[in-house]
Structure formats: C-alpha cells, structure tokens
Figure (cartoon, rainbow, N blue to C red):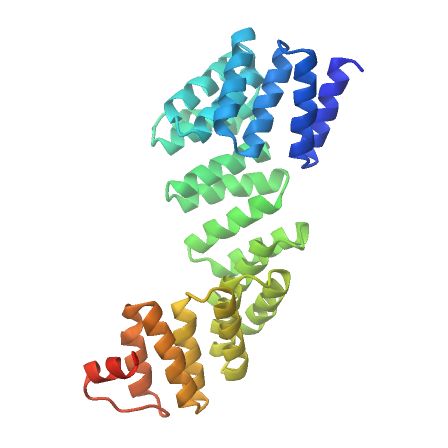
Length: 335
C-alpha cells in the first residue's frame, strides 16, 4: 500500500476514536519510513490525543526539523506547546502557521485564543479578521467562546458561541451556550440550549443534568424533575444529579422522593455533607427525628461548618427540638 493511503487509514482510525489502533499503525509505518515528516506530524497528533504532551512535542519538533514552514505541523506543535502550558511558544507557532498559510482558519483562531487567554488587547484585531474571513467556522468560534468564558466574559462568549451554533451546531457548542446563558442568569434560555445538545446527543449526561438544573432555576419544577430523573437514569453514579433531583422534589414538598434522592447521592459520594444536611431536614419534616439526628450527625462529622444550618433546622422547624445552648447541641451531635 502506498504511504498516502496508509496514512489515510491511520487518520480514519484516529477520527473513529481508535487512538490505540492509530498509534500502533503509525508506529509500524514509522518503522518503514522513519524520516517521513507527515508520519512524524501524525505521531505528534496521536500523542496529543493520548494526552502524552512530551511525546507530542518531541514528534512535532522532529517533523518541523524536516519542513519548518509546514502550516499543519506548526499547528500541531502549537497545540502541544499550549497543552504543555507554554503559551508564549504556542502563540509563536500559531502565528508562524498563519504566515505560512493565511487562509488556514485553525491557525488564526488558535492564535486569537492564545491572545485572549493572555489578556492581549491585540486579540481584537484577530477577532475582526476571523469575523470577516471565517464567519462560519464552528470549531474556531467554539474555541473563541471557550476562551472568553475562561476570561469571565459570558456576553462576548455567547456571541461567539451563537455564531458557531448557527454555522454547524454540535453538542459542545450548545453546552457552552448553556453555560454562558447560565452565567448571565438567563436560565430558561440555558435550558433550551442544553435541550438542543440533548437533541444532537440524547445520551449526553452533562446536558441532561444541566438542563434539569437550569429548569429548576427558571422555576419549572415539574420540568426540572423530569429532566433530572432522566439525568440520573443516564448516569446512576452522578451524586450531583441525585442532589439536584433532591433539591427539586424537596421544593415540590415531596419528602419521600427527596429523602430517596439524597440517600442515593450519599451512596455515590459519602462525603457530600450538603446531602446529609438536607436528608436530615426532610426526615425531620416527616416526623422521624431520630433518623434526622443521625443524618445531621453524619453531616457534622463530614464538615463542621454545617452546624449553623443544622441548628437552625432543629430549633426552627415545627417538628424539632429547642436548644438554648449551642455547645450542648453540638456535643449531642458528636456522640
């Protein structure tokens, strides 16, 4: 088989998610043609996928030694430098890739992202260029949106992500849109964004969870409950999902369902003190004060700063206890 066809097969394995298979096939090809720069570039890309940053940098630099101005290799090398935390070097490589191939959107967007991450005001110039030259590049605008989110600029991030979603929506784009809308307090719109992610990927556990949380914040308790029940069905090991479900059904005054959800959260994450406190509250409201005290005792053992909530719940609720001495109350919960 010709080398180009063999490389295409490796790329197909990589794009299909078979990183180990791609690595093995690439290694075999390198044994045949150790000085082929395309194979060295491919080895660097595979190493990045595997999370082996040092190996990615080694292969990328060896590929650049053979063809220093090859834009795709410069991009891979820049990605490796960025993954290694060398932002200055990453920006230098991306800008070299831009000069080598100005029509390559990946290099321009990544340079823009590096500048945004560094708080460099020159990022505006690149953003303006991207808007003119690559208005519909979904990966690029997604990366820009993510960088702006990290910089704490949700409005600007949302604008970039909305552009990405209009061009070619992906679950990641909608998840990030939902996060930006949440940061802006637009919870109903955030729920719609998470729902859009689920439409594209019905098994997306994060989208299911965040949709339920957003619906609760928007005041749609029935919708939130249904969404969170779906979320924990998709991910039965999600303590966050069970805790959010507990909060929702507790808001609905469904004590038994809330107790079940908080117990499930604690079964997954025994250190979740907030779930233990809330379990105590719903048990106390149901009249089972002994079980409530056990839950409060557990919460206090996990985190001492839960005592204020516990004391308030025990003394303020109709089915509680009157304690005039906080120290005596704390001692009663530690024995």
